[in-house]
Image (tube, rainbow, N blue to C red; front, side, top):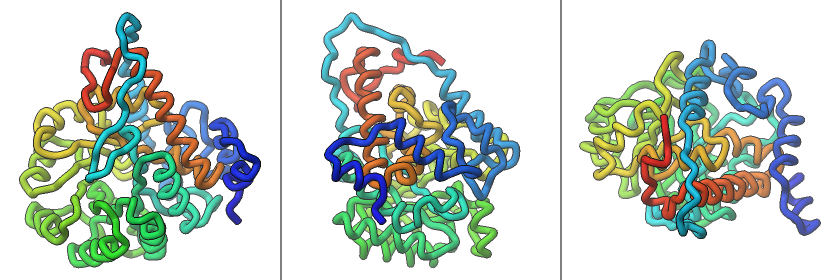
Amino acid sequence: SRGLGDVYKRQGFKMDIKEVKANAREKMKGFCNVCKICDGIFCSGKVPGMGGTGTGESFKISYLKLKNIKVVMRTLHNVTEPKMNIELFGQKLSFPCLGAPITGTKFNMGGGVTEEEYCHDVIKGAVDAGTIGMIGDTGDPTCYEFGLKAIKENNGMGIAIIKPRSNEEIIKRIRMAEEAGAIAVGVDVDGAGLVTMKLFGQPVGPKSFEDLKELVNSTKLPFIVKGILSVDEAKLCAEAGVNTIVVSNHGGRVLAETLAPCDVLEEIVEAVGDKINVLVDGSVREGVDILKYLALGAKGVLVGRPLIWGSIGGREEGVKTIFDTLRNQLNQAMILTGTADANSVEKRIIVK
């Protein structure tokens, strides 16, 4: 069934973010508690599941480091209607926030929605909110196939992110994405040590510079590398012709005690931001989190976990509600910091 989102649509009113979360909490017991403070404590070590690997420290530190960046409120200015649109991959987005690639509704999320339903919700919900969703890849091939189906049904308005398999296998999946009309493709290289792939018996691993160049040259679509946490690897991506990198530690789900994205984002942008697009993910829970990342130099952010809540708690309409809420919160944060344009956010609005 189409579920709660359709019920709300038929009754002619929008879903409320609190109800989306309450519905998700009820359906995700044991996998995600939809905590009021999403700091990675409840779900520590739950991989597969929703938590961070090992003790969960990499998840926790990403949350804490971002939380400890504060914004400076300014109200003596004339910014009343901030410009929130950005352009990315040849598309105009309503605000600088995209859906992150996520798979595994059954073994990661508790099965509150099927993989096909989740892919539909994220891609269509993003389109409805004026932005772009990404699909992911995992050991179960139907997950990627359902994602491509959702992209095709939405006129190609979606991005396919593939696990760091052999180049032959990646290129095979790139061709599938091209056929579905995807606007961009990429690899989440930080999935090189992912436990869930090992459980499915499917090898993944690091990529050499030559591997990366081969992948970039295998397609005319913009190529994305997700999972960069160092300046030297950001420079390698730029040299290889990568269109966009995502500064990310894979939600703290692959390596314990690694850096938080906000630890390295600023220096990565300084090194390659004039050559390639730099996006970032990690602990985006409110619109002000987006603003913090923009102030550190990111062109945009990816949001993941809240979209899971949106899909399970309200299907397609729930996902749109998550995006709309983040956009409204970002708008308010921009007004209250005197930020006129999401494409040009001054570092002076934050204090580390």
